[in-house]
Image 1 (cartoon, one colour):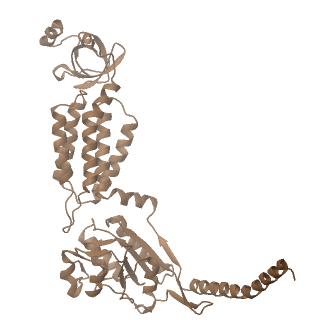
Image 2: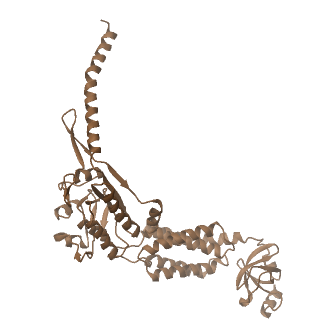
Image 3: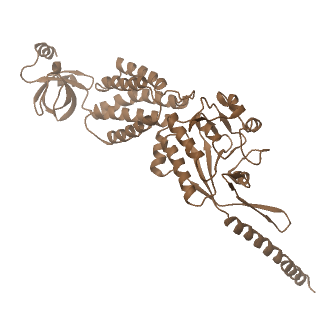
Length: 449
């Protein structure tokens, strides 16, 4: 037999021998997958960021949904550094978890996740709790009271009251409640394995199927997992309720509205400023805010606006910057020992951004928007024009075919289309008076020019 024919014969014989083995392995894999599909599913809800009213409601809705859609358990994948809802609201949420008809498990993961403050106390009412290696829980503060019973970590309460513990310490302190207590739960798949065989609320959880493969090794297949996340609008509301987002949105919104209000007309900047201000207001409505800090922020914008009118940064710009810096550090109140103040990076972005805006950017934009020939503009003193809208005491005038920001002489109001005379120029703002009845000193000043 030739060499080529021998090679084809050997390959064909190999295929004949291997094909049944491959078919057997595929059949067993399909069998394992089929058996796993027969298990009741497990629902997973991600709890990320500060727990606000949106997240609290989402957890309660998830419990109701799991009770009604045939789920055998609900897993809360938790990574949160605190809650901004009231203690009563958190107690209500803990009561909903305790009263759930389906077992509720809390997994603090993945690695690096946190469960701090009042959210950490939810582990005391969950049926199964686990942590990923590298995750930490603690800083619980004063414990919540649910149905007239104070929640407790037992002998571990002192260890987690003011500090955090990792997985190893939490296991040794008896904080965690799951079957495989000799190792952490690094990924969600391992959490399903940890749930298997756990008896809770009169139900033994069946989340894993063991099947022998072709080599006689046991293959573990987990049940179906259904993931649920916040919808688009709730996710937006949850995002703006973070201190960093609320701080920056409020700053941007107020700055843009100052620009539009003092530069005549409503444009894209005004629309964007209104939207961001509304979103920022929604955020601060959820967060623990200081009235003193908010008042300082508003006063800072008023101070900035004084110099924006003339297009030149002066004393009031410096006053506004000082007020804004103080407001940035005082507008958020701590909750249960947890600071709500934005990170240093966020604060630096806000402070540097507002400084550049009102020292460099805003004056340039104002001068550009009201640009008229600046060479010999003192020649405008004595020129006449008409008021574009009412001037009382600030407004806009039309002089020599160009619009100018204007302020009336001694706050004398001028009606729409009233004839005016320019008596002085302050930056890019014209000092004007009515044609008849102007102040004597301004006429003398005009004569000197």
